[in-house]
Amino acid sequence: MKAITNVLKAGIAMMMVISQLASATVTKELPQSQYYGYKVTHHMTEMIKHLDQFGFNTFDHPAIADYRFFVITPALDHLYSKAIIDTRWGPVIVDTPAKDDRYSSISITDMEHFAIYEKVTAKAGERFVIIHEDYQGKIPQGTVIKTKSDFPLVFLRTQSFDFNEDKLSNAIRQQARISGAWQSVELPNEKDPQAILNWTIEHTTPYKETASLMSEAAKNHTATAHKEAFNYIYKYLQTGQVTNSTGMFDAIDSPTGATHLVRAAGTLLGHLGLPTQHAFYQNIPVNRKGKILSGENGPFTLTIPHNPGMKEFWSITRYSNKTRLPLNPADIGGHDIQAYNGFNTTPDENGNVTFTFSQQDPKDGSYWMPVTKGYYLIVRYYGPNEKINGKTAHDIVYKGTKLEKTFVVRKF
Figure (cartoon, rainbow, N blue to C red):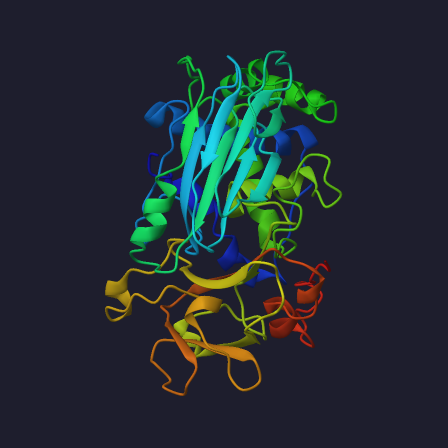
């Protein structure tokens, strides 16, 4: 994919601006169709860029994220594999590879940025058959997934146990295969929101819940309206009302699905994130007193259960406020400590693990992660369930503080 634009980088600065919780305000709400138009335009702009570079039915296997990556706030727990498939000509088969006991998953997102399928993939590998809902022909064996979109996105994640160079994880993901007929298509101008929206309508069977929003957006969502929506969402994020991923990336009919505004914000915070029941993301941008996390503000410590009880695994990753990416080792004394996980940490006698985020190694037995002036943390829980209730990072960091109500934690 092409490098993400500087404007988008600025827009995803949610983690830093939440430190302005007390003072931020938003103006009068925009029409729902404007949020919807923004979400779809943002998503499809990136999909158009992907198609322009890779075409249909071909996986892109980017290297694990670092300070030069093209996606903001990337997970460092796994390697990505992405493909846009063409369902116009019949079934598209996706074969996931056999693997060891590591986590791997498939998620499928439609052209309106709704999740239509997600699953932890089997150790022996699996076959998935994606068809357009109007298809009437023979269907091959496999897990059948129906879509309203001509061109849904298939996203594979393969867990990595070496953040810098996991050759086995890379070898596993490279075995993923796609088969199915496809034909090139004329792409719309990626800088014209109305052209993108009308092109999306042309290649999507509408949802009854959102058909009118799409139609209205296609008529009114100009480049000016898109910029206005971006500015509104940016200010909305400054209010601190979005502190985790609940409902952002869920299916259209999910009981945990968020509002159109929150879903639009989700395209900025974690485009193509997993639905709530599969993965739960928490943002830690400020300390217990509401002060932005920064090496200049002294050490920040975090103690969490080593095994909170989720089905899969947890991870904690630190990002630069300036770039929204992992830190450049050159800026932290040559160190390349970017993330921690259950597999590269050991619990103490109480079953906990303690992290220290600071400019200097405390050498106190905690797991040290070097930081710069401004940074934020994302804690990810894969396979969240009721066992993690009361044990998440937000529960621990903000309980009993003035920020407890702001960082309210959903219950599973």
